Image (cartoon, rainbow, N blue to C red; front, side):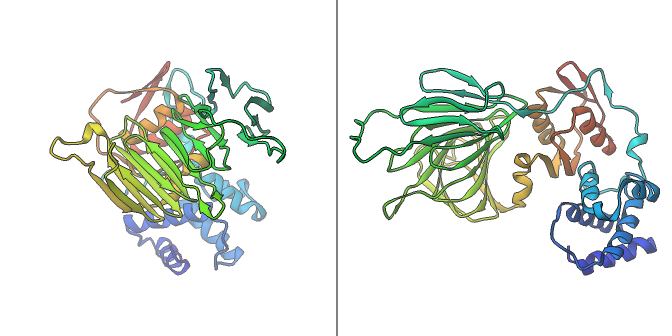
Length: 400
């Protein structure tokens, strides 16, 4: 939203003439500002005054709370904290959660709380040895040929192939060694592949790759949800392609950033391009090729959704907010008119719970952000603002 539009909405808010849709737009601007590091045209005094006005209308407190919670120097940090727990809910359209103080809400109906997921993964080497990375020490974990596999202080896994002197004769060609990195439920992990490509795995995901890429191509296989920042690599003057095998599609890139969601419990495989360009070959025979542009997402039906009279997979391409797609990598759940079943599948994977519905699911939709570092009870308390109720029994989450 442009600043002049925000000014107009703030004025209407002060006059009490905001419509429900305009109120939702104003709140969205409030959240967008909280995450933005770019300067705005409001002066600092004017901005603080306007934000107090919006704060008074939001379901999180009053002006006294605001004054106690922040000084001018820490304004942006405080707002970012507020935004992390503010969520708007819709039931067919936006509605406003009028003046609800989150600290006055009843406790979520839980018998025990559940902690969020974290950096957990298993690295399976070519010989079958398994390394549990959350317990592994910092430093070199293993060596395969001339490639060293290490864990950094930040918890990332890296592959480094040593440069051999020219006097050392080349090794005889042999089958490459393959490694598999896999995350459980409530796990995620980052790995730097041997070519310098950075990869983030969401919960219940995997990537299989060679410990050293051959000089002519780079191929990996994935399951679940994986985000890539592909390094551009050349052999002389020739670019070495990077290919991702995901379900029944092959994604080919040279150097780019993209996200692939291929969970089997979702109806579609979703590939979202943030930067660069990719070519997607669909189907086991790869007869249909689709070029994707930055800001686009292609959705391809899984095999179970393919009709007998439709030998090539049905698909759709649309423009999308790419940052919301990769928010999981940055530590957030991001919902953009997301239905309750879709949201619950994300929560099930991240908190390692089984979701059970006591009654048929209503057409709830959710928009907003919640930190993935929050305990499950806190997430449920926020979602209950929209009229959905939950209880936890062991590792079972019951939607009431």
